[in-house]
Image (cartoon, rainbow, N blue to C red; front, side, top):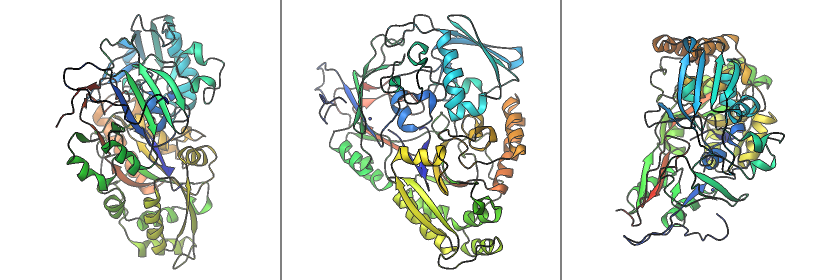
Length: 531
């Protein structure tokens, strides 16, 4: 789910109790005995700020999306369904969207939700800091009107059929104006003590240790959530997290390393499921990010050489243990209606890579030529080591630099102080939701999981604009096919893998909604472990 940095300079990221709870906080009661249920989720890194409207980071969203809501939700077929908005109308040929808010919704502090909160969220947070929403809506949104406290009207400069698909809690979480107004939205006090409308309320946060949430008994969806306490424990080491799952110390692990998958599938009381594509955090691609401000990487011959030096099949099989397939271009194959494989491919060919580097003025054998730094978040040593050996065969020296998740994000996306980075960019149900922000020039800036390469191509900008406004899906597909072919020729990024992550959880819990951000909303505890 969500975006996860890998930095070659990068990371894949993700899932976070008060000291009063033990490691075995989830207790399995005998059948027929009523007991409050606690769900413990393993988190691979510190979530940092808990304001999901200013970031697409998975570590933030997997916690905060349980606290907040979007105007709409996405069902299992990734179709928009009512959430904070109970209905909406499309007017003026798709240029006006009128949302009627659900009456009676209150923030966790008891203040009523109003249309002013929605307007504030978009104008002061999403359109400034959220890389996916900013990339698509900033150039398209003419104005937001709030004719009354329960009505929000989006006036667009052109028809935009994808709008409802990008208003869920992952893409557009609504935050309270009365809490955030006048604060630093990135690091102010509210980012450490969030107030939402969602199924869980904030209790406590110990950085690098745990976040504790409790059931919101005033939640507008009656009967939800199904557990009383939700704890996210920070366990950066994947093996430690899996061991904790097997011992009953945690109940949900968001990423299952390949070597552990077969064993967990055969373990009584543990379920293993693959991610599904389409939601705001699914259909993710792990992508190397070249810093195009570096003269060597600005040279198309160098980028094509690096593309030929990477053995994607080896990386899928040996680094990701088969959890995915080699990427063929800038759109994940699970976004089937827009995807095409009919683009320039870069077969693994170290000899061809060396010839291209020679032409570009970087001759070298055994690594005496081009030297690049790969900065990555801890936990991706295996990827770094594989890339180092593959690039070495083409005459490129790769220097490995390991940082923690937040430091890697900052160095790549904010400071731009890197040579190569890697992020897990999630595509979403529509290319305008997750793909566009990676390539359009308007999304170059110090925003996490934005156009980190600094790629500029007016033709690409224009095609994405045209595709976003085209109501006919067949014509939209033709535009996205052209985008994929142009990007594959220009190779502004190195697409590694269309990933398919595995999640594991104790089967005494049911109802995980793995296609959406609020994945814990419907969870129930059966009180007796299932076989």
